Image (cartoon, rainbow, N blue to C red; front, side, top):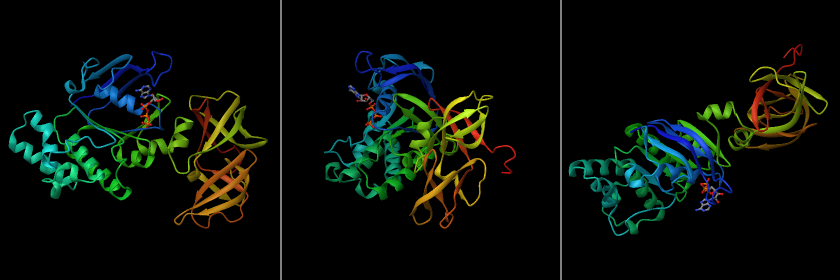
Length: 361
Ligand SMILES: Nc1ncnc2c1ncn2[C@@H]1O[C@H](COP(=O)(O)OP(=O)(O)OP(=O)(O)O)[C@@H](O)[C@H]1O
């Protein structure tokens, strides 16, 4: 097992006119469980296939434990890959499908049996081991594919490309926690591609967010939620996503229209005057009967009752916002208080919003 390093790796499918993946330098640390999260077409599969060797990048080098493997085919990389749809020998039994990657690498018979049974137990396949794979439903066939990806102990990494797409929602939860269990047991580096934030946040030690062929942020799930470094991360992670208002910094004060909403605290020293975007997650908007800085005057326009929480819709001078509140919190209040808000320029976070001095907040 080893770190996987991408050195200036980029890829174009059209001879350099456009880039599916912008040149990037990035290390996947040995033994970590990563989710690679991003919308359709952002380059997730391209990146995964470059790591496994199915695609040779148009530029840059792929290193496995410091060894340059850029020109090597998948079979020489010792990386297992699980695809969106089942890839199985349909005429073989489930047992033989699971055993195949091990027998291929001349594992001793007893170890083959031990590993096949262990993976089968973890994935709930024990009672199907003798069945022909083509007799299984597509969901179960995909679980066998997953098992084939996870059965080897010595792989450098297991790459999973939206592996639970064909699986029903209830079983998805179970399988995700099984994957975590298997990860704890084997210590493999896992890279799990998904466009589903819940899947990414519940599975991974570290979530890597990809947009338009570039990594915009990576971190632990809580970090992406509490401290989005890019406007896109604010939108894409969280439900509903981050509220965004057009704002401006003037001599250290943040304005939305004519309202003074708070004080700008730059991430790297004082923020120069000019337009910014103010981002605040619904979870950090409080509805208040009186002004409280940082915050904004607003009127409640509607409430969605979601059971354990309410989504309160409010209209402020700079636009509409949503607050996620405890049931009963909204009342007829006319002010929004922002417990945690961020400032963005050119989509990159440049600061946070603090209370106005002398506001008493
Ligand atoms: N074989 C190919 N030939 C030409 N363009 C391709 C090819 N494969 C992918 N692309 C393009 O490269 C970009 C990235 O695609 P990729 O499949 O890597 O994204 P993705 O994030 O995995 O998307 P999805 O979630 O829809 O699978 C897209 O614009 C896609 O249309």
